[in-house]
Every structure is written in structure tokens, then in C-alpha cells.
Amino acid sequence: MFNTTIRRIALAMGLGLAMIGGASAQEKLKIGFIYVGPVGDFGWSYQHDQGRKAIEAAFPGRVETTFVESVPEADSDRAIEQLARTGHRLIFTTSFGFMEPTLRVARKYPNVMFEHATGFKRDKNVATYSAKFHEGRYIIGRIAGKMTKTNTIGYVGAFPIPEVIAGINAFYLGAKSVNPNVKIKIAWAYDWFNPPKEGDAAKTLIDQGADVITQHTDSPAPLQQAAQRNIFAFGQASDMTKFAPNHILTSIIDDWAPYYVERTRAMLEGKWQSQDVFDGLAKGKVKMGPYVNMPPDVKKLAEETEAAIIAGKVDPFMCPVMAQDGKVVECKGGDRLSNEQVFGMNFYVQGIEGTIPK
Image (tube, rainbow, N blue to C red; front, side, top):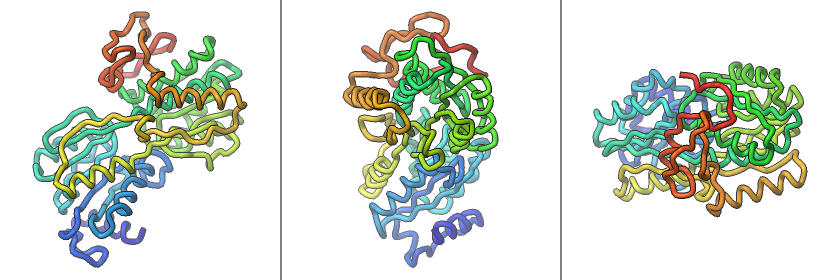
């Protein structure tokens, strides 16, 4: 941790980081990470940082990693370029809003390889990668549909981007599949990591009658707010059990470590190529935390749903999918919506009230 802190300070000062850990940096593959939140968010950025640590453990003495945390999406060019200028040959930018800045910097540094999480624009030296978080959200939706007593479930969203919209739709469809009377309320935090805003959004949902809530934001604040109001909730990106052990139902866990190790190995072996990867439960990039605080039949339902998704027998967006306006969405993935349709989702499914914010 001490060395990591020194690396961050040196990076901020514009130093070359030539001698860290007692070896010349030029002898090692230098890998950089850009995080939208702090590594202590215990959610999204925390899990990416666990992946960074996995790289160091997998390639001792062969790599050197650096991270810059709490980087605003709108002002990320400088942080990304600073990594490129200080000898980092592989750079992971880990938030949707880093997409255009990553592409701009990549064009200036064609010999540096970049990987952008949750984006959809690539280049010769820019790869993209994401995970099918919506698969986990369908599972927790089914749990929520069974657990709610008010028939109102709540969703704290960060920004109305396709990834978040797909998660909302999957959560609602999961709940609707086991509870035809369920309604969903949505509150927007307009931030990825802002515990006060996230907590306030959760309060709003609870005040509107939601007795089970979930989130697509990065801190445990919504879960903690649910615990204070004695209702159930779900963890996001990491296993958040410790923050509300008696009120959490499960967590959707992002496991980036295998991917980061794989891509680092490709760099070390000279085999790195631009690509797009979109994996889910079947490949282990999305995992479910322990199913707790629920009746045995609900736990069994969750486990069976998870197994069916992994086997390819169930998908959150099995066709036909009805849009909010009642029209059938064209089915481009055989018996389910295609990955491209999910990744670019810009509509609510039938049954969700309200409009997507612009």
C-alpha cells in the first residue's frame, strides 16, 4: 500500500517513476488504471482495483501497476495522458464516461494499448470490455418480486446510459415474472459515487412505498439506508454483506481479475489485439453473492435462475420483449435480444412508468 501511494503521488507530480520497488521501471511492463471513484468505495472501483492486484500477484517482478482514483469523467484526458506519458504501455480506463477521452489520448499515443470498460468505440490500440450485469439483475429482480409486501420495488440509478437502462429493465422483468402486480420506482443520483446523493435517492424510493431496493451506483449508501428503514436491499459490484448483514439479500459481484490477468499476459507475450468482450455469469465475470435473509423457496428460485442463465436456458431478454409503448422489439439474437441490442438499450420495457431522462 505504501508503494502504491508513492506511485500515485509521483504520478501527480509528473515524475517518471523510474525506480520504484528497487528495479528499473523499464524492465517491467507498466500498467495503469483510471478509476471514477475511490478504491475504498467497496463497490465498482474497489473491484477493479482487486483486478489490478491480481495482475501483480500473477506476474511478480514482471509488471508494475499504477492507479489514479476519483477521476471526474468530464476531466479525465489529463489523467489518462499522464499515464501514457510516463511509460505505461497498457492502460485500463474503467468508467463509461472515459470513452471519448480514452480515444483522444489513444490517437496521440499509438504505441500504447488502451482498454475501456463498458464502452462501445474501439480503435487499433483501443479495446473494450464489459460484463452482463443485467443477468444478475434479473436474478435479484425475481428475489425482489417474491420478497416485496407492498408490491413496489425501487431502483437507484447513476446515469440513464444503456447499461443502466438494461439493468432496470432486467430487474423489473425478473420481478414481473414471479409477481404480476409489482411496480418499480426509479430515482437518479446523477453520479457514480456520491454516498449522500445515493442515500437520498434510496430515501425517496422508500418514502414512495418501495420495500425492496437495489442500485446501480457504487457506494453502500442505498443498502445502508435500507437497513436503517428496516427493508431489504442488494449489494452492487462487490459483496456488501458487511454493511447490512441482516438486510442484504445478495450482491451482484464483478470479477475483473481473470480478464486483467489474461490481457496482461497477452501484452507480455506480444499477442495483444483490439477486441470487444461482453461476458456474464457463464464466464464468471459476473458472480452472485450469498443468498441470505430470504425463505428457502426464494433462495431455491434464485439458485435455479442463476443455473439456468449459466446454462443458456434463460436470458433476461428472451423474446418477445415488449417496449414501453407496447410494440414488440425486433429480436436479433435468435430467441433473445442480441448483445448489441442490450448494450445499446435506450427504452423501458412495458410496465415501467415514466420516461428515461435526457
